[in-house]
Length: 315
Image (cartoon, rainbow, N blue to C red; front, top):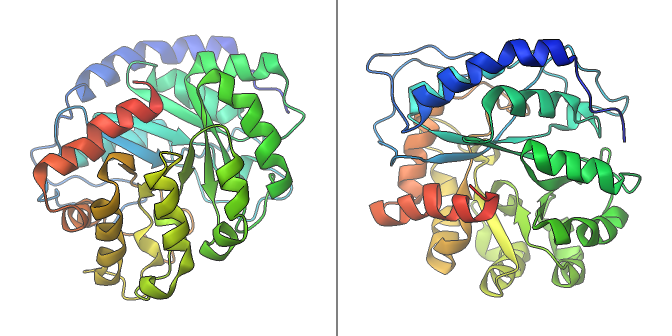
């Protein structure tokens, strides 16, 4: 694992902004007028009003100060903490989970720097490590707000299927989970692996279930079985997989509603900002309104956006 230290003076300079920013977002304050946000199309506010203390459980921060991994295939421009705060203001989202992007491999320095800027009161993180990670490094990540590790398996990057089980055993005593970004076919092929994992599993982007032919996708049955067993969670995110696309993304609705019907208590939501693998920059307000289509019931939305996320990430 690479060195996760950053310039201490720079970190201390950033600290005063933490308190002010956290206070502004504490209850999900929404802008009262149209607002432009980097890496997000449009300026209009969403029609859907988020409940207080809503949590965006999947977004990234990109900072060119930190080195790109040699194996990286996704290398977008900077998407800063300040940029994301604008998105929070536009959407009315109070808390957030930063996911280490594949761009930086196992060098979590940028993740730790961003976590320091946001602060533990409002923010958690998901790191990427390999089997060389030390117990001390895991404890340092824990102290910074990390609550899980991610395996990007499609396309392959810094992690592999062979690392999943040994690393899951390492993080389980910390109360962490593993986060998996894999194709539906890969999820099916590794069915026994998921059942053997000692810690919770969080599947990214609706577990990449094929849309709209979800009834023909065995991945849905595998994931739903794990949900029913209490072994897995699913992120309601990833509208960019839609074959129809904006403005309706209508082919994503049946899959999301299938998960809501089967296990609403095992779901969380994520914006996926700044949308690093999208073919075009989407309108985040429209994507939030799409979540309203995925989850029409107000009480269930609150369960997913607040209660479930608090439990999973230890807020």
